[in-house]
Image (cartoon, rainbow, N blue to C red; front, top):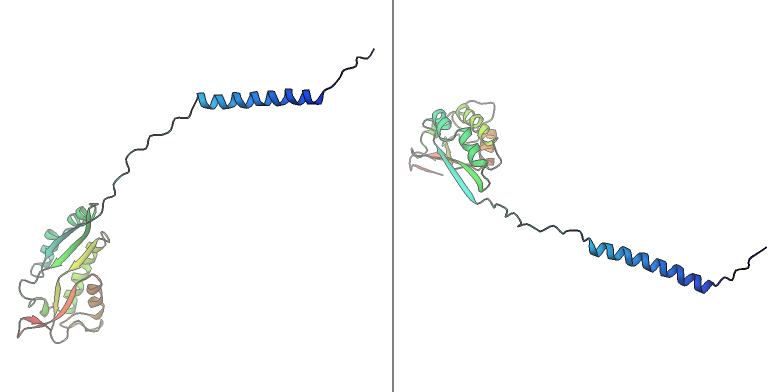
Length: 177
């Protein structure tokens, strides 16, 4: 025996749609009941703007001793590692008016360059400052293969790159030209 059933498609659609609506409502209520906690924003870190400039003085008079004590590598590193320090200047003093350095031979300037380079290598914050006086006759134009009074061309370029000013010494006026 067969039982005949009447199907009402409209009624079936209503039931299915009602069940789907109930599932969506249940899902929405679960989200509302259990919200995800939002992180509380903390204060933004204030960036340190380097503004300080530190100057370490030295002179030719006691070059080896002055370099070791007044501009030691540890001192330069200490200042260069500080966030608020913008530059560390290795400043040459000319208390003798430049007369001492004007008598230097090329090897003297080159040896000083080698010693100073180890200080400049510590940080890109390290800069040179001050005036280097060279021989009034030969100046800073001595060819690199000549040992004479004055400064080799390559050393002159190096000192200028490090922000030192190079001038010819004029003994008659105690001034540079």
